[in-house]
Image (cartoon, rainbow, N blue to C red; front, side, top):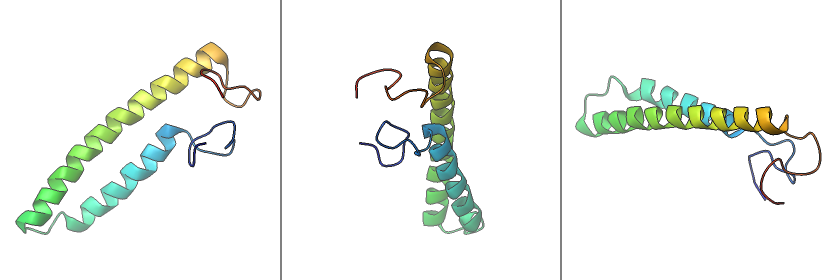
Length: 88
């Protein structure tokens, strides 16, 4: 059972890429709050967050690609009660 993602038990869930976009947005907001803090600790956290943002952006691209492959091959999600790939 998934808590956040669309699944047969959670039809009102979100797509992975949408959740990642929300997380990316939250991290960007945090970055703007610490970007003028010149303490080394704050700068290290900012640098880490910038690296995380790049990784999340890469993950969004991969998740979008997976959604496109599934949509093209099997139609939109939630079309029937069966998962598009894998088992229940």
